Length: 253
Image (cartoon, rainbow, N blue to C red; front, side):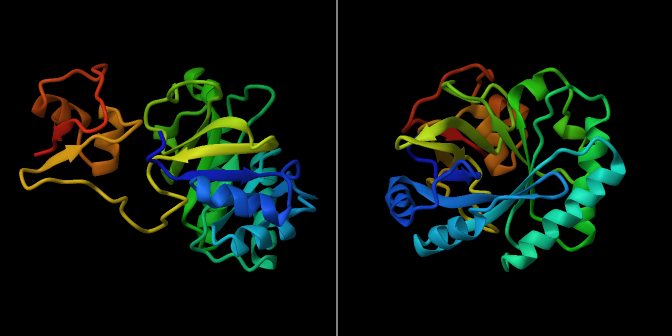
């Protein structure tokens, strides 16, 4: 996975020390998602210092909100509270605005509530959005990414695995500790956070082949390149479970 940029998700439990941000940037952490708000009235008191430290370390800065809503009205109120804080910190509309949805009790209305929250942001001009959920919520069919109205990037929380257990993840939070600090750390498969509004660099040869990088799989390559998975597998006479290795050439046309 060393070929993928990494993202630090910062909460109030994350240090705001400048030296920490300087130390993680050369290790591949190119962006920080700073949690600004929780529910409809809680703020991360370290957010200002974390944003400043990330910027001084020349990282891209994005924002997140931890959901506590249980009704559509609460979802809208939390979205507006979140937006007020992003504006207070002068974060641009182009920054990623992430909803961290980790309910303690499975709720059949989860999809409706997520849509209310994200559509409120969208109507206020904030269209670069992510949904961050645990892998369990998806495997238990509580959250169905394909049914989200805005089709945001998908960040999956799935600790201590070799690969995320959910196909289609754009970002994968794989650990909650980094350099002896309490820190959520993620691989950014699609460069959604680390190179916003850019297409991730591709290694293409003259005969339209893709050169496999560490951590790649057929479904990941298909998603990155905008190719139907079935078409990619057919081109390579492969199945989705076939292993591929760094340096291997994959036909894409």
